[in-house]
Image (cartoon, rainbow, N blue to C red; front, side):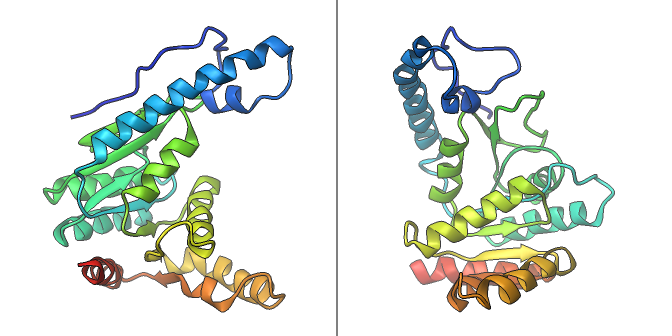
Length: 240
């Protein structure tokens, strides 16, 4: 079953812009800003509907990765295996609902008989939830969507990706570092894709004292799907 947000529209919507862009815009005539207070109602509506839809989700893992990963790429196959393995371990799989690596993880979950969730986002270009999403929510605001990934996940699996994937990864690490969330497993799948980032963090950030070793220790880098699942299961079982 798919659902989406259909709250009240604001008359200043401009073609080719997103809700986030209009919210964060600080330029223009003063009258423009009078709509900001009304946006709070739309933001509230997104939170309420998402909380209601996902409240009974059960143990879930968020899987991130590039929307640009083609279906014949090894990372796509890795995404399918990740979705399947998490489902077989009793987890719901949550992704951003898009194509590429996200589609692969949703596909793996669906084909393994599990629940496949997609949390989509309004973008300037046409976007849709991939065909393997069972329950889909479309968000206007990135920060509402990000809240749902964190609130309803017991761990993050991060496949190779781009800027958006890095944003999701480092936001999770920041929230854990600052104790805004209970620390949970963060697993980077694909050693060859991620090793350079980890080396840079160690040789530059850690060496200069900008992070602690404990920050690096939050990250597990592996190619082994079974190792990833074991970490997620151990974290789940430790909460029981």
